[in-house]
Image (cartoon, rainbow, N blue to C red):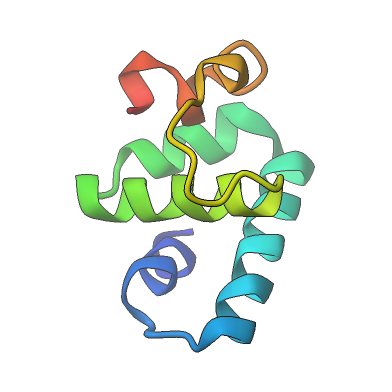
Length: 84
């Protein structure tokens, strides 16, 4: 997970690759669940955490939007107050 998260922040993807990475990020969160995903994400530096959250927002169609409050109940470890 560490390498996957690192890639979100530092791989320098082009637009198409970035979209694909965001889709994989969202699918991974839904597959492994918030407990595992959020716990792994919490161990990453703040810049990496933020980039992964941006990818997740993009995956659900909210790229560029900052309001995540409605995601906190479903994914409290990934998007909750402790999660950013």
